[in-house]
Length: 334
Image 1: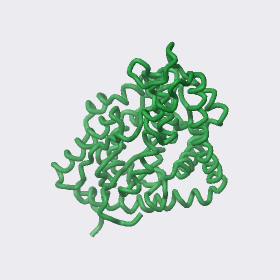
Image 2 (image 1 turned 45 degrees about the vertical axis):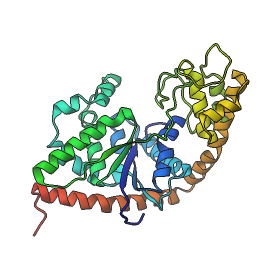
Image 3 (image 1 turned 90 degrees about the vertical axis):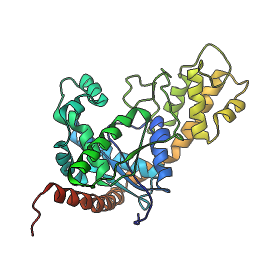
Image 4 (image 1 turned 180 degrees about the vertical axis):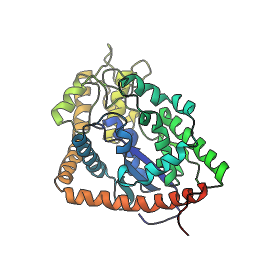
């Protein structure tokens, strides 16, 4: 990833479970496209992951699996920095400085803190509350211009902007104030069992989400069980959320428009339609799964990718952190 005048994008995801086809359509697919247009830093956010209790060996395994999956999906380590967050210590170091400019009341009002506090009432730790500050450090370290997020995640970019402006006002221009990049091209994929909700990797209903790791038979079975309606017409409509969702999924993995998908399945029954969607998704996932398996069998190569990415990230992050330390008055030697 050569230095350039291109805009900088930062994004990260936790290694906390299987990614769904919704994650692919709304995030990973866009990461692949953005690396051609922007200077991109893509992190596997293991520091964020431990705000919820993790089994250490499982966390390490999922970290490598996610890295392999990203590369298998088309993330090119020659054109971006793909790295593990904890391998660049500047993330935690900058978070500490930014904590001194962040107020408890702000953190208590964050939607994610409220949600996770309810889900993990036995483990409401300071990391859970401080999560947005670490996220701000992630973004600001790389002087990111844009942060790709869904509409429901804009709050985290907004608090990052607030913290950046607060620091700049107190110490002088230091951080670039990032903008949320709401990606309109990313299709919003809903639950197969409740199309009023987004597909989630943490859904308790095993038939609600299709994971990128699901085998062919599982994928097809889940689509056959997908919720539809009492009609028999395959068309996209607000009053047909289940069918609209399936048309959206088909269009994403077939590479066509929803209107083209509607035309293709005109007069086709729901059973055949759902089977066709399942087969199309399974066909698209097969080469990704095969490549991920190949990469995981060569941990030396995969480790080299992550090491190289961490070196690139470290160089950019250290430049920002050194400036911050100078601005706040830390003694760095004469």
